[in-house]
Length: 116
Image 1: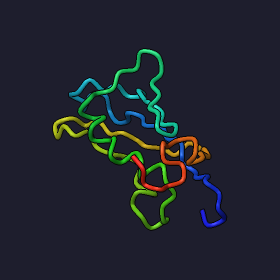
Image 2 (image 1 turned 90 degrees about the vertical axis):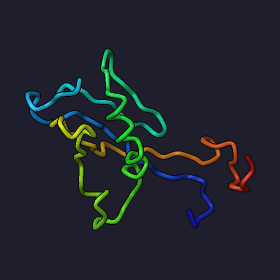
Image 3 (image 1 turned 120 degrees about the vertical axis):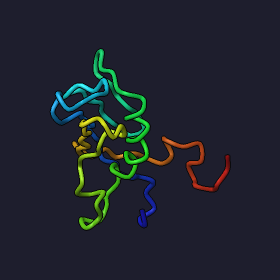
């Protein structure tokens, strides 16, 4: 931030399986979900999530956590298709709230000097 603060804001996310269960060929179950809170993926109880679906979703999550232009598709498109072209599952990524972080608390390089 230009005011000298080391604070930044990320959206919390909910990633939920949506669609018609009859169209799904993978192990997804409608209603299964996980949360993204900062850098953490939070799974409830016995929730299982496909490794292949997760690998397709992971690159999108940091972008969905950040403020984007209202014209950017990342701000408006919520559903991502299952990476298996024969599976009808979709994954809805919903911004659920905002969380403030301090750079000095989340990196080994709090001053941004570029040290490893």
